[in-house]
Length: 414
Image 1 (cartoon, rainbow, N blue to C red):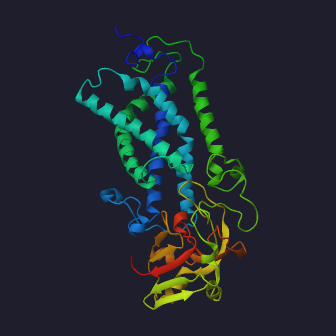
Image 2 (cartoon, helix red, strand yellow):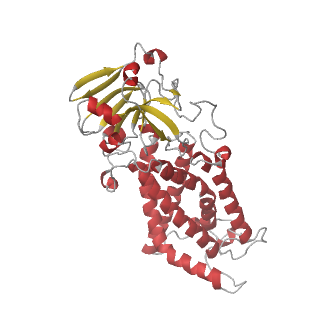
Image 3 (cartoon, rainbow, N blue to C red):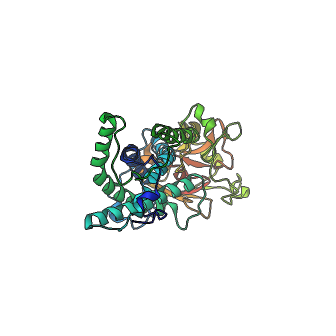
């Protein structure tokens, strides 16, 4: 008989809550939730148009893992705000469910012998990859949401490859366990009350219960609801914006006035010298078949100006409400550069260091009449932190592609 003090002994795990039905309910929730997370994560990656230019691709060498990529659309204009908002909010909301599921199956991680057969060995390997992958993906995701980059390397690369490894293990595990989970749910619905469960998760010597399983589900659900309420508001408009305390820029709007909405990088952080943006020094360089054109801010203000109401949505899951932008259409600048039909464009910032100081936009983004080189926002000139003297604003694009402090635009096929 095994020593009951060792975690490899079934008697070591004494909680009366553990059992196949408890685990099955949590597993079904995660099956749906993680599938949505994976799909919205792939859409987030596609939104960067990584096949357009190396400056947009934070995961070089992706190979066949980029098989699904497509040109990211500009309509509906809130598309990225929705997909990334769902991705981040759902990921945070599922954390209590994930932790409860891992707690419910932790005895299996210590089962001896480690493998009783080839099939059992494969299941154990998939389980280890699943648990490790889940902890890695959720941890790096939460750190990214909080702008805490404690891990080595690029978040984009780590999260992208980690997602494929995790989801492969998740799919294999789901294929093995889904029939069992459904059978346990049917028993939960139709089985006689008080019928004892028989499973390796059920303790042979359970302790006295301190909470019912219904209470445990309520605790998990309540924790998920609390995380939803304190995170969802920064992705969507409405009363929850004031309760979104667990995401960057949470709580009330940052200040008032035309520029009183969220940013990630300030001008000071990006080392933008106000002297570089002054009217007598700053010039926008536009390059194309017609040659090189240099335009000051006053020159741009004399061109036809247009307005568009668009949000800014970032990979961390936060987004602004729709702001009123006014500026020169990108397709008009493409025409100035010598193109009858809008091509791709490479946009470069005054910012000298850091990711996405350069960004590429596809021809369909340049052609959209709502895509602007913005000069004003909400009826006033841009503030320095919001990209003065000029910034890009494109519908449905991730925030980092809406380059601030624009210095050069090179039109042509990329």
